[in-house]
Image (cartoon, rainbow, N blue to C red; front, side, top):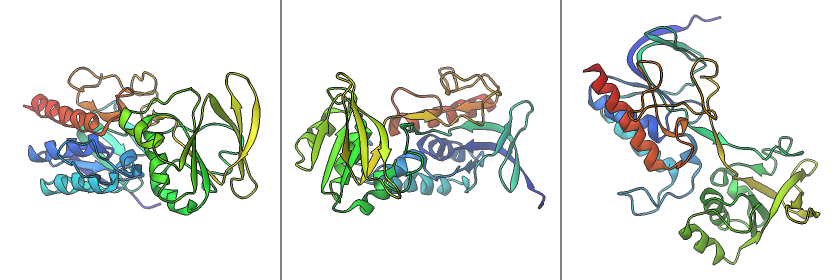
Length: 307
């Protein structure tokens, strides 16, 4: 087995979403030479968003991927280093903290944890088996594969409704399946969806099974009020029922509350020298601007603590 290289760094940022990259911009400008571990996906969840139109200063629609690349360019401009690897383990018991990837061992004087969140699955029969074969958690990634087909979107929040609207560029019909009798999405998204002739709604309904041999063929659904079940033909299903924090690296090492890391008002964790930001700590707002602000706040606190 090849021996891993060793690297010392003043600031190691674990995660490359809006929180992590904002932290990188601020710490780099303070000449702390931060290193960002991107994790499995550079940019995290925001790269799965087709259109961003509520980020201040960016009035025209922009894809999540394009916006996050602007974050990357800005961070690198100030001297941040991007390591396209994922943290495999973190030792918080000593300082410098030890963080291992598949090829390196980092010895970091300070850590900013910004590993974000991931999509929640339906956890019903057939879902896992047909993931990638009609079951998707990313309309931006997979929408074009469903051109001319009838698909379902499960969820009623803003993300679900926005992704349903995006899918209408390709599909024949989108049915939004929601367990309540009204959407939770913001008013602008609701208005756009309800005025779109390609979108219809199935209220008070949950999915109990994804049906298909080699590809999704139908969904078994259940009305939560009457208990009645039926099978509806679909050629694809997109799941947007929420997110949970990516916290496996911290389990048993840091205090967690519902998978999230508790922090003080300045984004400090219980371990001196360790800070956290973004959806690693925020399960309420889950907005790009909030994550970016928290990343900046964590960085500024770190800078002040060093001073």
